[in-house]
Length: 66
Image 1 (cartoon, rainbow, N blue to C red):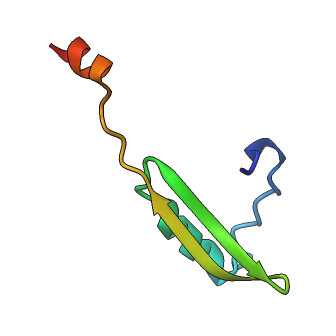
Image 2 (image 1 turned 30 degrees about the horizontal axis):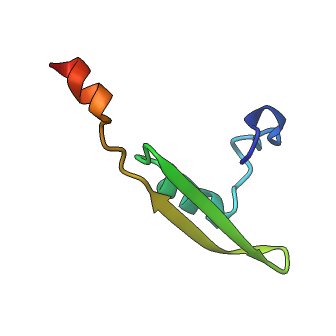
């Protein structure tokens, strides 16, 4: 997991970002619970995997809603 407090400083707006950055953003958008993994080979990102989780309400949540 990435600690965003130690994440690199964003590039200036005029400097283009690598293609994979746009792909990762697209995978993260709309993801409520889940994981986006980057697979790296020889220092290059070669694959992006997304696992989405669907959370079901617990019995306690259902009782509280009544």
